[in-house]
Length: 200
Image: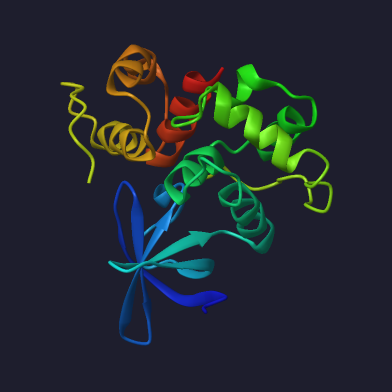
């Protein structure tokens, strides 16, 4: 089992990055690929999921984020994709507070999390997250097409990443006009603002 990968970012897509480790490219699914850029030297903590049909790597910026992911996927109804969508919101402290205070309305804003799953999150994790340090990380993160018609490639990439995380296309289209007016500097800025709008 891998603990981490240390190498160079070779590619960035809406739902994964490729990390080149001494000439071997590892496809790593991550909550926000656009926090990385090609040619970055990185250390990525990873979790390897093995099934009959695939071996999949999930990547995290630090050890604490990986531990939170492991706690999330231990909950019935939360798979790796749903866990990544939850982690894509940089407010991990808010997530842990919502679980602690049984704030189901906050938890159901994440894609793939209904009232039953939100209740299960609270039931399984309440009182079990105190060992995790409050998240203090920078903004965390084969899409279909979300059309913007504005020719902003960075915004297009951010919308594609939101779709890859599991947010509904109708919900994304509702926040797209606000994102067009948002003065983002890069894809990560647009993605972070999109996550804020979708979960507020």
